[in-house]
Image 1 (cartoon, rainbow, N blue to C red):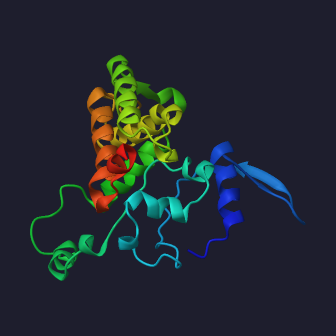
Image 2 (image 1 turned 30 degrees about the horizontal axis):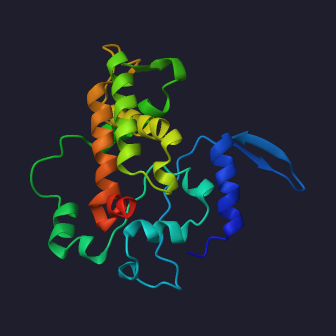
Image 3 (image 1 turned 90 degrees about the horizontal axis):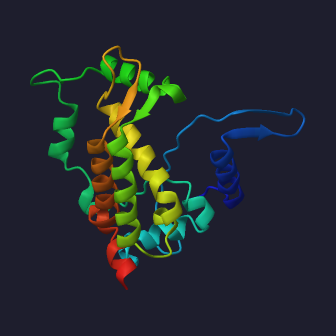
Length: 212
């Protein structure tokens, strides 16, 4: 919550252009191939999430400018009722029981594989492109409102990026492991996941907000 407003605006410029520029005693520029995860609490003036009519209001209060919020692909609200219980935490760190299906080494390699795919190695199935257009239109219509996270002209690109991440996580690849293939089921899952985060999780309630 103490992130200076102008710093967030500068970060928006970097995320839009994909280039970071430094000016001062030393000057230069470099590609900014990064993904950011921002975590925070409601602004101190408002106190608790329960003080907001809708979870999305807390997001908009923390990130006030639409152009800044538009650069986020996803947002999630977590309330105290969503916290892990002591029993859940104990199970998550327990070394007892069967070995995990995927080791940390395998997970790391999957991330590196996804990160090193070049533009011509990312392929969209023709049907997946059609499904992307359909699902994007459905979401835009369902959440028709003034919230930048569901801006219609951005939705296809936003949903496409989420679908590509899901395809990579599922290692949707050619036999030789060179190509990343995005299929219709990845797009449908991305649409379902996005809709769930915008509605039920943490009482985001963007659907209710949009209907008022």
